[in-house]
Every structure is written in C-alpha cells, then in structure tokens.
Amino acid sequence: MNAPAQFAERASDGDLDDFAGICLIEAGFVRAGWKEKQLAVDQLQTLAEHWGIADNDKAQGRVQDAMARAFLMLHGRVDARNSAVVMEASCPDDLTRESHFGPPHGSYPERADGFPDDSLEGQPGSRVAPRFTPIALDEVTLTAEPPWLIDGLLPARGLACIIGEPKCGKSFMTSDMLCTVAQGAPYAGRATLKGPVIYLTGEGVSGFKRRLVAMRQHRGIDGKGVPFYLIEDVPDLGSQATDLLQLLAELDVFIAQRCSERPRAIVLDTLARCMGESDENSARDMGRFVNRCGVIERHFGCVVVVVHHVGKDPSRGGRGSNALNGAADVTMLVEKGKAHSTVTIEEMKDGREGQTWEFRLLSHVLEQNHSDPAETMPEISTCVVEIVSEPTTSKPIETKSKNPPKGVTGDLLKVIRRAIEEAGERNVDSVAVPNNVCAVGRENLKRCCALMHWQDQAGKPDSFRAMFNKTLNTLRDAGQIGFDKEWIWLT
View 1 (cartoon, helix red, strand yellow):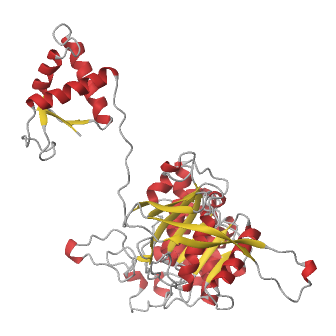
View 2 (view 1 turned 90 degrees about the vertical axis):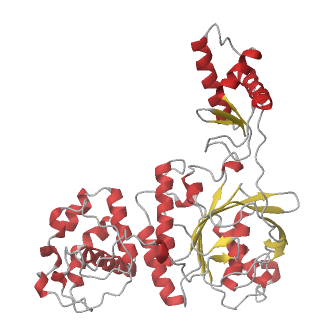
C-alpha cells in the first residue's frame, strides 16, 4: 500500500477535512516552473477515491492537481499565495519523504524565481507563506475592497444569516435583495456593489423557479444577462462526508467559463438542508458548517448568505446551536405581519443594529408561451416582492424591564437603597464604581441592615455573613447592583 493510501486509512475524518482545506485554498494557483507534478498526482489518486470524487472528471482532475500542489507546498517547492495548515502532525512520516514525490531534490527544475528547491526546504527563508506573522500597529492598513455589498445592510465579505419562521417570506426577500446586487440596482434606497450571485436551494425548487421567472418579468430584465445563477441543490457542509471539495471545484469551472468576475454572494437556502446527517443542535456540527462557510468565503472572496429557520423563541436567533449566531457578521430577522413583512437587523458586527424596513408580496401571473394553446396552459401565479419602506436609522435595542426581586433578596435591595440615600458617596476611591454614581460602604450597609432588621446580624453572625454575600451576588446577577470589596451601588 502506498503512502497516500496509508494516510487515507489512518487519518481521521477531521484530518481529511483539514487536508481538504489545504487543497481548496491552493486550488487553481499558478505552478510556475513545475513539470513533475503528475508524479504526485498519481500517488494521491487514492485520496481522491477515498473522498468519493469520481463522478466529475474535471472536478477530479482539479482536486488531484490541488492535492499535489498542497503536498509539494509542504516541501517549499511551490509558492503559496495564501497560508495553509501544515499537517505534519497527522501525516505519517513516510508521506513526507522525497521518495514519494518523484526524483531527489537535485533533479527538480529551478523555481520561477531562480532558487533551487533543496535550498529552501526546512530553512527559515522557505517560500511557504507563514500564517502567524505579527504586524506592527503603524503598519496596519485597510484593504481597498469596498466594505459593503449593500450599503449599511450587507457586508461585502463574511457570513450573513437571514432568519425567520417558516413561510414568513425570507427566501422571497433574500432572492429579491440579491437580484438587485446582480443588477447593480439600488436596494431599498441603498447603493449596491454589482456582481454575480449564486443561489443554491434545496427546498421547493419548482416553486422557487417560478419565483425567479416572476421576478425577472416584474423587474423587466428578461434577456439582459443579469448574472444571477440558480443551483437546484445544496451541498452537505455539516457532516464529515462533506461535498465542499466538489462544490468549490465545480463552481471554479463554472465561473471560469461563464463569469467575467468572482461572485459577490453565494446563498445557501436553507441551512437545515446543508447539514447532511449532522445535527444543527450540536455545537461541533454547527461549528463545522460555519468553518466550511468560511472556506467558501475566503476561496471566492464573497459574502456567504445562509437562510435559516428561527427557534421557538425568535429573540434567541436561529434554530439550533448558537455557534452560528456568534459567527455571523450580520443577522437579519424576517417577521410576517398581516399586511406586510418586516426585516430587522438583529445583530451586526461592524454596522448599525436595529435598522428595519418593510416589504410585501404581490401576486404575479406568469406570462405564458403564446405558441401553446391557451386551454392547455392553466394560469400560473406566484408572488414578487415590493419594498414598502426603506431602512430606518438605527434605534437603540430595547432591553427587557427588570422584574423586581422578592423575599429576602427584595428586602436587601430596599436596605441598599435606603443606605445609599442616607450614607452614599460620589466619586469614591474605587476604579470599579462608575463616575458620579453614589455608592455606600459595606460597614454602613451592615448598620442599615441592623436598623431595618434584615436577618439576625448580632445573634447569628456567621449565618448573616453567608446570607449577606449570597444575596449581594444574586442582586448583581440580576443586574440590580454592582459591588467590589468595599462599595455597593445601584445599576
């Protein structure tokens, strides 16, 4: 059994995922000065078969080529435009020996930059791009890329989540919003960055196709070559047997043949269909999905938009593990009303939260093919989106009112309030107490406890001390007070 076959049998699925990441990051880059890559390609065929990539010849060839480049990159024999994970810890020792990669170092041709390969391997000056290079504060610069795909609403890069209950119109809204990106038209009064959009859907495909035809007719863009592309399936991005390799390889081929530029957005509708056999409630499985969305985003330099259902409590974000909520750069909540639906930016890392706008669905009868007899073509209708109101300016997100504590806890809060009124001080000598906030010292508070008969401080000092500290912690956890070693104050 050759080395790749041994690796395929010994490696865990996680190791294979990591290795696939290297291949994907490196796929398609120029291999200047290389004439021997086929030797590595042949030996790595076993890994391609292990991953089940045999249905598409073009995809298979591309992945094999990427595999070869990834392994050769580990030896410093191929330039890497992007940094990659080095898997020496998970690769068997014999896999990294030069005997598995063709002739000895001296037989390899010189690199495009004139450096022989054997002068680079294992040296500090290796051409493999380092991953963890510190950058001085004064040297940090902004990229020239525009930050917004839709000004102030949707970032040009990252992970965006469109969430809502079933049948709330979130897929209608998402496809309409991103069609304006493909057109380069304003969306809800906001400027867009024009570019191709690839929309993958695995739910109600025939109905979704009717929506797209209606949208095309409604917008008057029939035959105008708007670069909005539908894929009638979604990849498995959640389970260990992922379709990630095949997805990127096939999209690379499509983009090279059909698009003049990289996609601006890739939509996955819905997340549940993209999880395969994995569990969206599992932090590990959801984390794997998020990581693979990150690979897609970095590979194409675009925003990845995920359409997802909310849980039982919409205020807690998307259904399942909160790993998705934490990773999203923006989360939009779609809520259906009687006359129209509302979109709210619930969370945004680098923009204004709380923005809202409204849309409604209008019935649209699809235009028929006039060459067919009318009696054989029943009327087909669907809906199109109409924006009712443009996004509002940012509003402070309302916080839930604090329920007043009761019992022993509520009684101590009353004591604290009275103690602050009678013996409170401002601008005390404590970094923990906010400026200009009145605080009371612990000894004064304990004296007030005795005056107001809160617990038996004199008769049971140990019991009082334990109850006092426990109740202070309860009040702090409830957001009612703050305290340090010496001072207590109201929040």
